[in-house]
Image: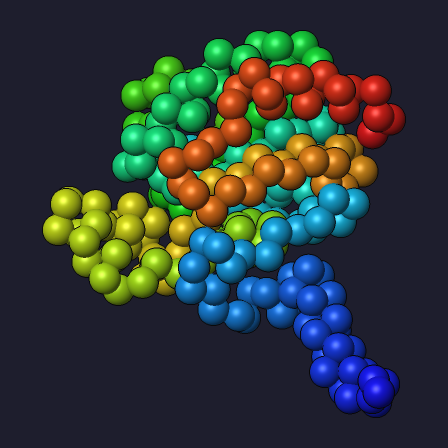
Length: 217
């Protein structure tokens, strides 16, 4: 016979923990050790006021940006990642169409502003890149994780130092992600894949963006 009290004892705390994680009040304090364990923000949840830096080092508020115009927000690992550079370049190919649909395209990484300048020049990008060196935005969107020491040291041995690129010692990276956010600052669509080699195809993103234009932001 099922003991309902035992079910409540174990089930309810799990639900409460899930709610707290999705609200991101607890997420920023939890150490996520694997890309597979991230807990992305849900569709319908809101983007709070998050201060980031543009390529000139000026502070910008992500919440204010999306309240002005619906945004397609891309999280990428950094300009050192060839898969990220390829993805950013592919997105450049549809940027004009996205703008024509009424969107702004914003790509966010842990890289310092000066590193993002290099990424823009290297990939000939026309859209906005923002620096999230302290990983505030990645944590809020629930896509940040801690790089283990073995992987970090392997990167260093190959000349890739995350501390130099971000100016921080947190060893955090975002899982490559795509979010579409309306002017109401609410998430309309998300695509999060822990496999950093697998990215959302530009043509698929364009199709989704077109479909979402029927939604009143």
